[in-house]
Image 1 (cartoon, helix red, strand yellow):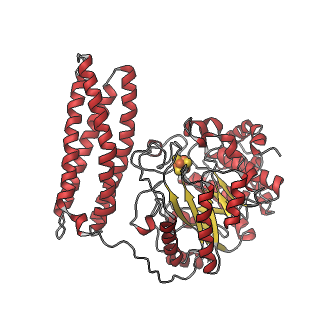
Image 2: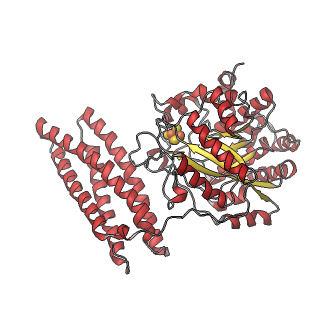
Image 3: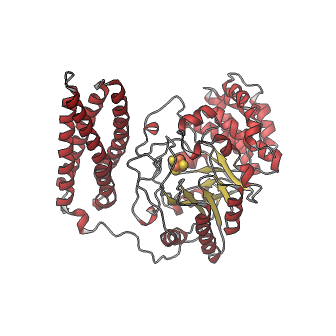
Amino acid sequence: MAGFSQFFASQQSRNERLAAISAPLRHPEEVFRTADRGKGLDAEAAASLFAAAGRDQNCRIEIQAAANRVREHWATKTVEFIIPVYLASFCQNECLYCGYRRSNPIAERIRLGLADFERQLDLVLSWGHRQIELVLSDDPEFGAETLARYVAATRRKLEALGGGVVALCSPVYQQEDYVRLREAGLDWVVEWQETYHRSHYDRWHFAGSPKRNFDSRLDLWDRVIPAGITKIGMGVLLGLYDFRYDALAVIEHGNYLRRSYGIEPHALGIPRLKPARGVLASQKPSRFTVSDDDFRLVVSVYHLAFPTSRLFFNTRESYDLNISLVAGGDLFTVDCETLPGAYLRRHLPGQFSTHDYPPRREVLARLEQRGLAGKYLTEETPCEIALPAPAPAAALDQKRWRDQHAQVRARLQDWEMALDRLSNNGAQALERQAADASLREILEFLKTVLTSHCRQEESELFPAFHPDAEVTSKLAAFRADHERFGVDLDKFERQMVSYGLSRDPTVLLTLGARMIREMRAHLEAEEQLWSSLKGHNV
Ligand code: SF4
């Protein structure tokens, strides 16, 4: 049987046209009447809503009201809780929007062994979670057969507690792998197409990455469903291309699944591109950045187009935004760590930035006030697994942190001198070569020693500070600096390549001077904070 890629090849330009229409092809009232019947929408109807919404705030309010009405009528009065448990952060892909891309120098690489994974699992199960989403990067050491052992362990533990659901967000596999995973106890598969726009997909996924195979990804559900897994979670990463185009493609794909297999998508992802450490593409707005208003519009259109599917609300978005949009029948994440093993450590940066949420019981109560029952979040039970103790005395050892700062300062000085040598236009070839070599060495040092120092500080030193408002905001600023340093180091490395070709050092000099200035200011600000804290050794 031909897969979705073959069908979509003939739809891509139509989709492009529909995404660009400026006047609706159907009146919104007519679209609402269609949606009221609970059978969803076709791409033309959805495109009409996007066109009508334009900048018309009243129309957007009407669309949201219609979406709420349709959900009230067709969806259940429950909201399902789901918690991600990351297994690995090693990755062979170069997705430019992701903190775990292969070449990101500041990503922390972890692969959880089965025993460590089970300890994480015991902890989140003790919190009452009964819907577990196993998440892993494209780690070549972590094939489907290995993964099946983690799925089976999750299934076993859930069954021992009265049952639950196992979901998976992973690299894409072959049909026989999904059969194996289903047999191990997997219930449903979550996979985002990222973007349905072929040339933009190629831009975001570097050549040589296994994930660059656009058609194979498009045909994923044509492998998963015949493997016997009929609950599928589909969607795009909003912000990689025009959101209207991508949302319409998701609707096309959902309608294809209805026609071909007679199933509704189990879930629809609404992840929006968010900052990630060391990811340049995620740090600044682009013409595809999706505003909060447009995000609300996409949620409403999905609610109308898939009246019984679960929209997957996640902690990339603020709690206030998500709680204002979630409807009956949706999925909701309250606890989320995106670094493998992080539930048993302290809150640490992982694949992307997440927001802090209120305690899960408070969220549950808020939903109940709206007449929505929480599902897959049961009573908490005592857990014998010890959460991390406050930072040990060694973490507060002043000498250790100051020595590391001194090391970094010395390399910043070397860096300044190497840039000085480059700025001398009349420099001889030999001198230029020496400056080049020195810059490469310094860059390597900063990518390893500086980034490791930043990570250690965040996990060992920062939690030791008393979290009053002033300190919390300073530590948040330091974390943001660490994130930016990773991006800048990446940028500087790319500029070294350009310089190697052009021999014009201008950009390298400006960028380097700024980075040195900012790193010095950062070191100083951290030391000021340490010395202002009474009762701490740092
Ligand atoms: S999105 Fe997934 S495959 Fe791509 S770099 Fe990140 S973890 Fe790897």
